[in-house]
Image 1 (cartoon, rainbow, N blue to C red):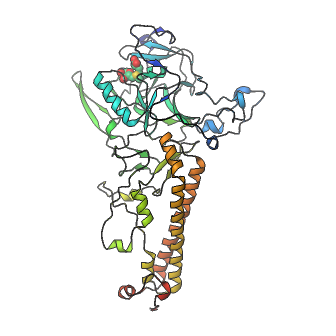
Image 2 (image 1 turned 60 degrees about the horizontal axis):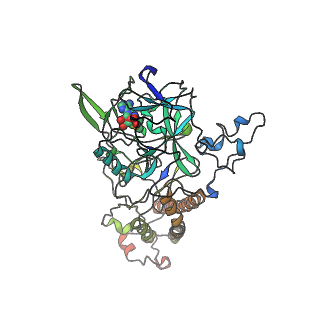
Length: 492
Ligand SMILES: C[S@@+](CC[C@H](N)C(=O)[O-])C[C@H]1O[C@@H](n2cnc3c(N)ncnc32)[C@H](O)[C@@H]1O
């Protein structure tokens, strides 16, 4: 942490007329460059169950409010606490008092101008909301222009906030490896916003700092002057930007067919005759209350057309095996059709749902020991082919019945996909953060039905293959697999 002596408060933040002072435009809310600000749909509004306590008005929508617990601000007009609601801090710009200071070696910084309590919302990190691609372009351009300070942080998997040209005072908060603040993401009227929150009680006059390693899209490596005993040496930190994994908590591992692989890199430097190193950067943001850490703030590959919508790079091996496991035509259409593995963050809990015909998480078993992907083509047993091998009519009928149910569920899922595609795509374009809960629920239900019917089919096949007498392969081949009734029962 910085001692007060190291800091030189020059003037209160409202007095920005100073020759030295960097030129930027002060803004009070994010400006969206590549899309419109999202309009919250009524069905997506999360309404808490808080009640106003007439004896304690300050307690309305406190820490036990359902919305607060899920890092969602209450929507005016919908909150049962009405004007007494305390959960609209971003919306009402309820910032702590801060002051700009000139630091030694670290440019400008932001100081607490009042005692701040642990957990308190301090200020919103505002700027221009841009795509990751634009962030990368700008970052390189700023570097080329020789800009020393970097102001781009991650907002979500596809977007960043750039406070270089336009921003709030949060742009002046410096990095510390032992920070007194942290960034948290909040859902405010359907948009994700980044706030700086106190990690601990912060006495007036203390410089505010958070750990950039979780946030920052810095360009060149900068020697860290935070002075902390645990200082990592450089800003921009644990993983190099180019090698950030796209981590999806639902899959519990980086998905290799979608994103670049992770490699913690170590970049070596010689500083003051000593060899030092920095490690790459991590860019996740902790949600309020640390309920989970599903925020995905990573760099998608160029080839990913939009968030979560990927061309499934499935390689189908041509072999005898494919006769027994022909690809389900629907599955193929889906795969070729940019199978959508969409990340839907529910309004409330930053949970991730997968939406899309190929919605099943990839299992660890898909990885060979050498780290390469096994062929990911999902195998679908040809039930009719299996029936050829079964000797009993009952067994064949059971398998075929289950197959029919599975096919029905697949067809339903396919038609539902077409029904909800516009809704999904609209949301993907608008924010990549939320899809109407009703859409997600419909989809999840259909996915579950399909999974259940698949399970029933495969378990009936396993059961019957294990328990029913089977035919010899040559006898089986002679049968007409399209009609069960024509199968001759040989009865072993
Ligand atoms: C978001 S800006 C912070 C405000 C900046 N100091 C200014 O004057 O505008 C980030 C930049 O501040 C500088 N900086 C922040 N923390 C630092 C630290 N601990 N050590 C050295 N430089 C730091 C780096 O130049 C970094 O690119």
